[in-house]
Image 1 (cartoon, rainbow, N blue to C red):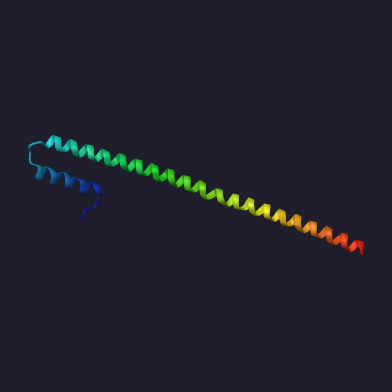
Image 2: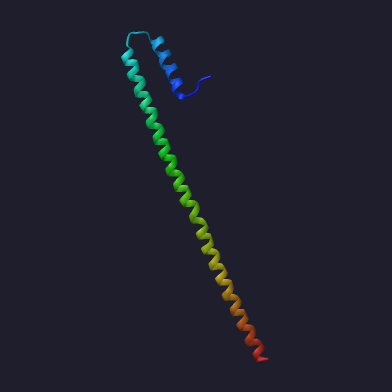
Length: 97
């Protein structure tokens, strides 16, 4: 079994050279180099994109709880005011009797 990507790459290069013949070995090697660089560039771009998306997701995950907690705090403050108003009404009602 192949141990790593480099082992696989060596086998692929040897197979291409054997199947391609000796007509244009330098051109074949250049093409392999170009494709290899394209693969590396694509891999780096993919990693950058994933890293950026994960950092954006992490930032977005932190925002909603704050917004939700702010909304909850406002709701609780409104309920406290309503209860205080109700308490004042009850005091006035009991004071009038």
